[in-house]
Length: 348
Ligand code: FES
Image (cartoon, rainbow, N blue to C red; front, side, top):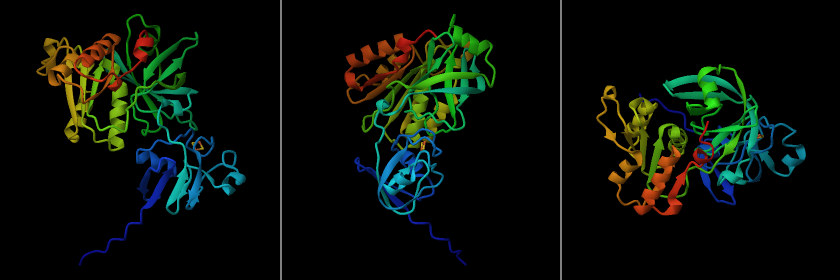
């Protein structure tokens, strides 16, 4: 006898105004979470009803205000139709008046303490550092942006965030040891789990430009992979289907410190290709893949770049060569995006 499955609850429609973006949700998550899952970035701070950063107006429909705290949402606010989107769940179809984050300028830059949670040596000269923020704090950022550490001597050191914004809780950084670099030598030789640091962020304008249907070429050199990892994970999370090719260059095989992850993206997603390139493979690498300079591998595959959008991150010399040579092969100047902090803050 066929079993009778309970009917799925009807989906609710959330419409954002003035953008007129609209999406369906089962109504189990907060308005904020539902919007983020649908690929629409709304402003937020604490995500637990305390700071008011996510406050917006419910123009039509009903919501359950959940754990909204009176300090962030007063009774007068509620009476005027406001809600904290990080706490409120839709009970019916709703129309929300809210500001959407369309670029880095829409996200406030914060200064926060953070605690070292994990230190993983993934190559001789690369550490993946995981940082935890205070319990009531979240750092909103766009995939591809960076933070900077505020050091005791007043100096700053910048590092890209390597995880995607939807991966809650931890910030992941990929840190390459710089010969003679004071801060990285501290990280490699002395840093311990639970150390407290201060950071400021998010910063930078290296993030995926949407809407666009242009195929994307990512060019990463060494730990320039970090912000590109964030962008690709975010793109996969929000269902971006534009063709993407990742060229990741390193000197030796060990420099491709998350090679298997990139291979997995390519094997699991038909719209992603991965081309690893080594400039000086060691005999022990037994490398049978591409060799040479990473940006030249792009040109060997795509001598005409007029239809592409390119995101490059790595050593300044690589980024400069890529920009010059790609534009000489037809890439429009406005379709080349690079991680600027590598120029400003190369000595870590
Ligand atoms: S994000 Fe802080 S109150 Fe919603």
